Amino acid sequence: MTRALDELLDLLDLERIEQNIFRGRSRSAVVPRVFGGQVAAQALVAAGRTVPDDRTAHSLHSYFLRMGDPGAPIVYSVDRIRDGRSFTTRRVVAVQHGQPIFHLSASFQTHEEGLEHQAAVPDAPDPESLPTAEQMLPRYADRFVDPKVVDRLLEARAAVDLRYVDEPPYGTAGSPREPRSQVWFRANGTLADDPLLHVCLATYVSDMTLLDSVLLAHGRGGWAVGDVVGASLDHAMWFHRPFRADEWLLYDQESPSASGGRGLGQARIWTRDGRLAISVIQEGVVRVPR
Image (cartoon, rainbow, N blue to C red):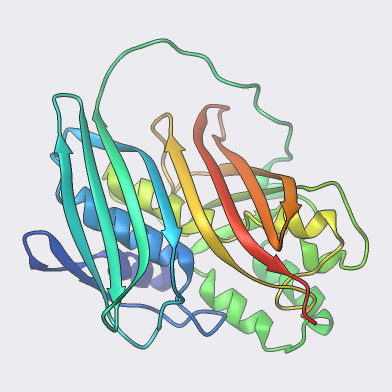
C-alpha cells in the first residue's frame, strides 16, 4: 500500500464522538476548499457505521450546501431514519462552524436474489496501455494558470491510479468535442475485504472527473486553465453489483445537458470483466468567468 493511500484510508476512518455523531479531518485540496468527494465518502462512512454488517449500500443521494473549510474538522450527525427487514435508511448532515455544508441520504440492503440484466459494456482500451498521471500531467503545465497545479494534482490523486482514455479537457481547450469522457481508476494498493470501504473509495473518486464531459462539449479546459469556475451541487449513486476499488474500474461519463449556469454529468462504472457496478449522476455549477 502506498503512503498516499494509507493517508486517505486514515482520512476515512472517522472518530466516533457519540453513538450517532462522528468527526472527520480534511486534507489539503487542489482548490482552497474541501474536496467534495471526501465529504461524500466520509458521510457514507458515518452512515455505514450505524448499519448492521449484513447490509451493504445500494444508493446515495446528496447535496453540497456550502464550501468546506479544509482547516477545520467536520462533524457528521447520523439520523437513523428506518431499519426495515430488508432495507435500512440513514440521513447524514455534515456541519462546520455551526452550519451544514453537506447533506446525504443513503440506503442499505440485505443480500437478495432477483431479476438480472444490464446495459452493454462500452469499448475501452486496456488500462495498462494508457499513460499514468505522472506521465500525462506535466505535458500540460504550460496550459495551466499556475504551473504548480501539476504538483498539487499529482499529490491530491496519489492514492488513486487514474488514467484518461482520451485527452482530458485541459488537453484540448478551445476545441469542442463530443461530451463524453472515459477514465480507468483503482486504488494505489490493496484494500481490506470490507464492502463499505470499497463503496466509499469509489464515492471519493466519482467526484474527480464527472463534469469533464460538460467542459468537453464547449471546448473548456476547466478551473486550472481559468476558462470556467464551478462546484458540485448534488450527487447521486446506485451500487448495483459487488466490486473492488483496488481493481480496475472503467468510469464512462457523458453530459446530456448544460443550461442556466449548470451542467449535468451522468456515468456508469464497470468492472474490468464487464459487470455494471455503479451508476452516477451529478449536477454542478459551470460558469464562464466575466
